[in-house]
Length: 124
Image (cartoon, rainbow, N blue to C red; front, side, top):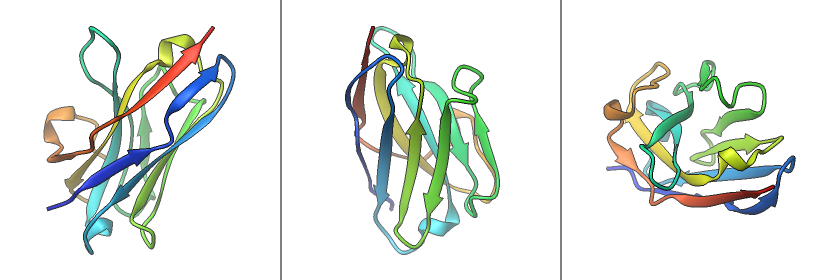
């Protein structure tokens, strides 16, 4: 079992930055590939970014590529999402997810564990 707790969301103006954190329980965090997803009001949850268990491989949605960076610190059982040049369309609840896998996983249905989400609101 893995428990995930996100933090770092909030209200920011367009063009600003936020860093989300996701703290994971358990001693096997380094065995899990991690991902960030988001869900805007009235829309389906969508992929944002993912990272392999070693941190050596990453993947991004086209909509955030060049603006967002995913990283992890296995010693701290934490994965991060640095979000720069934020746009109003980035407004959503952001979720952290985990799956026991070596490689980057971008498919939402393959993830086994989810956090409760953190709200990110970008004002224009």
